[in-house]
Image 1 (cartoon, rainbow, N blue to C red):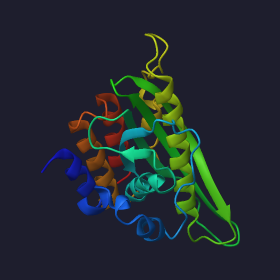
Image 2 (cartoon, rainbow, N blue to C red; image 1 turned 90 degrees about the horizontal axis):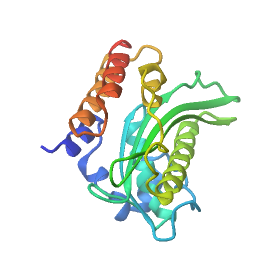
Image 3 (cartoon, rainbow, N blue to C red; image 1 turned 90 degrees about the vertical axis):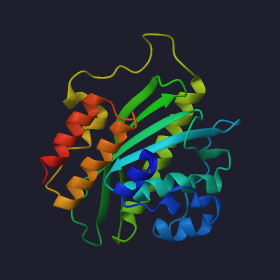
Length: 229
């Protein structure tokens, strides 16, 4: 079993869905796997010549996030996910920081960290952000927040990759302290159910074996998830 398939199984994702069901059933994907929400809107930042990227997701709602990235193509035919090659790579970590949802003041808040590399493996951008959705009812709020987060990440990737490789010394600086690394920040949070904590630790383990997650990020994320058992 290859590592790409293995991480999808660890995340609870079926191979069929994760290998591009959006190309076959875009409407089913948009209204079924992501809570009957509209797929992500047209994203103006996607370059005219298209954007093909490798996407890896770990943490809370990893499956739904993967589906949301796949659904981007519904309204953005120039966007595509690839298994190898492409214009670059996006790595996304997610933590759900929402309080308990109580209508009529529902709120879903996601802490999202991402790293964007060009096709040569150079880090172009590494950042974290908070994305929230609110409404009078709790249903679909987190799905909406996840869709908004995916749009934000695709916009950042489009702009960073289109600008191209930066001269030495001008790229994103990776923080040396684990606590200052954006990807590490999504590992922290309240106690998790044991199977969920172990699943997230397994996700980053598989990503490390694939060479997607660097050793420093792997060490801090795995420790953070296991500390939440």
